[in-house]
Image (cartoon, rainbow, N blue to C red; front, side):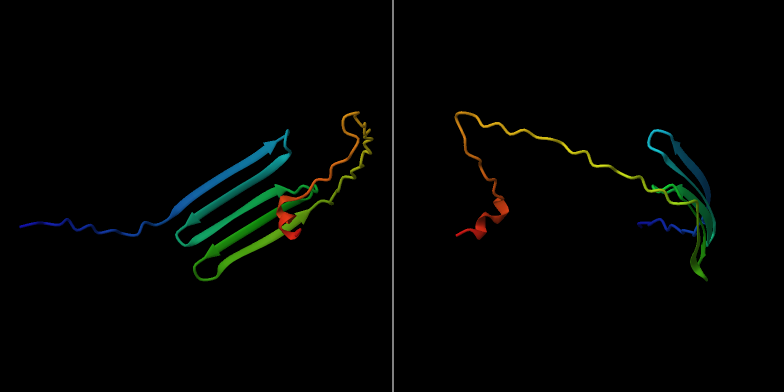
Length: 114
């Protein structure tokens, strides 16, 4: 007689909590997040510094009855740096061997020329 073991799985009650943050002065990456879950209910928040200097903070919660809800708050004033183009002078020298200029062509467009 062969006996096949019967495994009875109960659904575990999901429960966790975490928190982390990054403050990198070299890359200016600043952010944090915290979240906790108890059964079907999840709540948390995250904050990050946007590239324009504003701070985005999001508080969120979710459950199986009402779904996901997020409340977004932005603080600060956007700062956009002004970039100045540097004009680079180039000097073209003709060599004695080759006084002609060569035109580059695209391989992808070569099939268009008959």
